[in-house]
Length: 275
Image (spheres, rainbow, N blue to C red):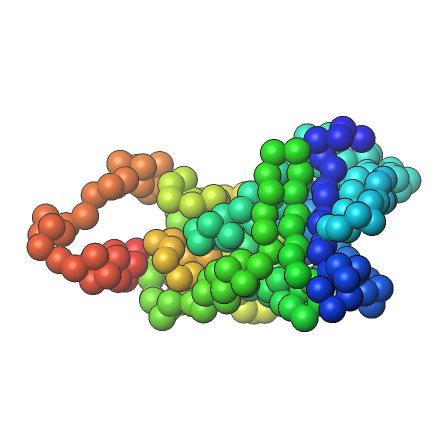
């Protein structure tokens, strides 16, 4: 495996333990790290599957304790091919991108759900009382998992008041497993994709519209400091047949004529409701 895909975890033990790391704390934190890696791995896979497992390729005891992990492609099952190198690279880059954005106080991607954020929160909270410092890095990024990181995760877990409105995008990646009843829409502008929750009664309609451009209506949920919803509780949806999606690109940057006279928060809320 390419060394550029290696993941390095650095942990510094408490002064009361002379900088050594306690075994139970290490095992617990490695579990948090594994689950956070897996959730991003599934996110970049269209079918929600994991593509890799991890092996320890290096470990150094000198403070900080340094453990180097290497992602390895999961052996293919009969009739299925191995994930591509590009797929593994995408997951690796995405993981560090999300960590870096959160640490810098910027919103995570809209397709990062609360479950994933809570795993990042566990990763940060698990260090408290167990480690003096904690860092995750690769060949080009280094992210401190500290009080600031935990504070930022908590901030983005708090959603702004939802608004009622519509969104348009291509309907893909349906998940019906255990009544999950979600699909993704991929808008042509504004954000990469948005998770949509729908009623069980709409399963057949979802199947019929798979791969088509649709307009969804319902309750839109926003993360703090984000102009685009990260999820929609769908009341109704329908196919767009008049190329409405194609000409949405021409609306980029446009607001009402009196936008300059309005408070920024008021303006954003009005734009949300108009959508």
